[in-house]
Length: 272
Picture 1 (cartoon, rainbow, N blue to C red):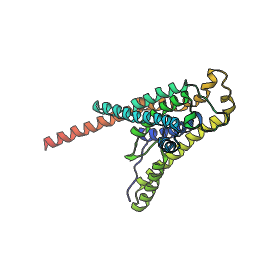
Picture 2: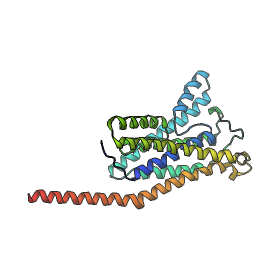
Picture 3: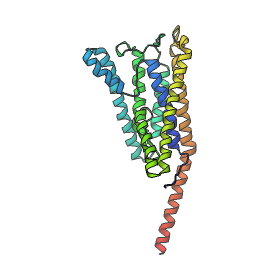
Picture 4: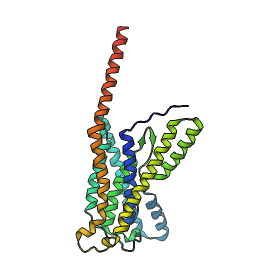
């Protein structure tokens, strides 16, 4: 039986935190802006359905969000490329970009639907469309760059793959008597639960404050639904603080220890 090795790492905290953020933002997009922005499967389905319906306005709206998502994937790859060339971690740069985008979205007014009916793409207001396009950039970066947890793949926005990986890890742990795989399975379970808590947090905010959102008498009330975005902003700020103030030091200490060990081993080889 293989022994399990587990310690709290920045990657673990990052994965759990972003799963919560992913769930919250998905619910925000659907409940507050009209349709999904972080995941593009729904938008692609909408495009193909509306081709049959000849609803060209809905097709254009969906394609705008899809192409913005593609641009986000390209942007994420460029950030990763330049960071790797300089031998630095690219995750903080993408977290900062996401932080800036979230702050911008807060100030974009919401045309909130009092009956809580999800909008069709053709009925999506210009402000809600712009907001969804900005959030699709965040979704692209979450999907493209935040993918590894303890050498295993995961996603912060799409739970189908995480469900499959969870079952696979639990099955493999029993088949191979590997406790590490059992821990990986529980990692995926925690990610899925945190994603659900993010969804519940955003929906609870909209559900209980719905009458206030529907008033829209002045600008503050039009952006009141966006105040839920202060939660993911706070989460990202905490992640950045943890990265630069705590885990950066421990990583540099480990590198120093490794370099000392390498130098000692080289000395012993030369003496031999």
